[in-house]
Image 1 (tube, rainbow, N blue to C red):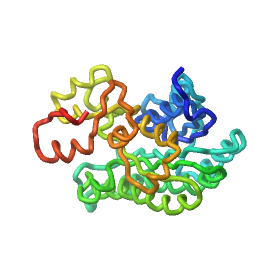
Image 2 (image 1 turned 60 degrees about the horizontal axis):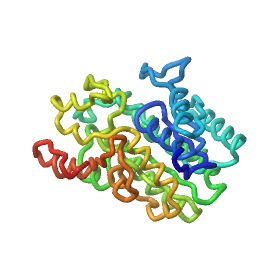
Image 3 (image 1 turned 90 degrees about the vertical axis):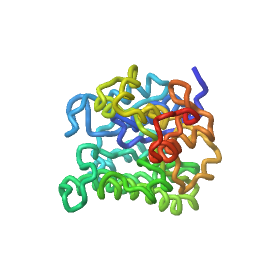
Image 4 (image 1 turned 180 degrees about the vertical axis):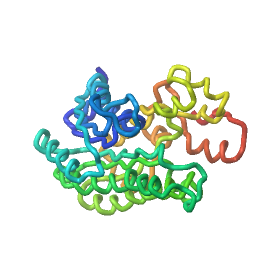
Length: 305
């Protein structure tokens, strides 16, 4: 078995049913961690997404990768459920070393390019609750446990770097506000956690080949390149395991505090730590997006993965 630098460490990945959360949980497991995975889709009951992925499946993948996966159904909008989750981790492990806030749930709630006055208000407010309020509740209740031991890490998952989002409109008023809020959340947490011996960062994947993205293009992971005929820039995309390796590298870095309060990306961290995606490449999506896609150049990933 490969080296497991996170053996003996305990992680909580909030929102680990699918996508980036699942990829992160599996890579933390591969590094030897005990990983608690949460979400609202279980083998007994699906969330409103009505998709087949479950947190039990994620937990099994964590264990298969070399860690210990533990699935706990949790609605992170319900403080009582989150409190019970944290109490259970405290009782069973006595510590929490890594907290990944990946709760999202907004793919079906935002309307592309729809201005705020035309966007469905209930959907927009629900999106903000799922994307921002869940993170605040989880931080409020879980951080006292994380702070019991020095060296804890909090990863706030978002879409886009602080630099990119500061000058680019992100799809809709509600989506833009949600993703920017999480970036600022990591900045604020950095100020509160840094003096107390812990680190907080914001982290974005690039163009993620999540289960829902692949379904949307009518492809699978093994033939994802077939989607390039529809969207050529999809050539820069990455698997959820890539950003998972970014989190595992941060969690194993004894000098991770150098990134406290910062906005990071999977592609940028790959250059720092040397990890690759599953195919051995190192896609640098956010540099590509600025220099190629947003510049209206033909799709060409040469030098970007």
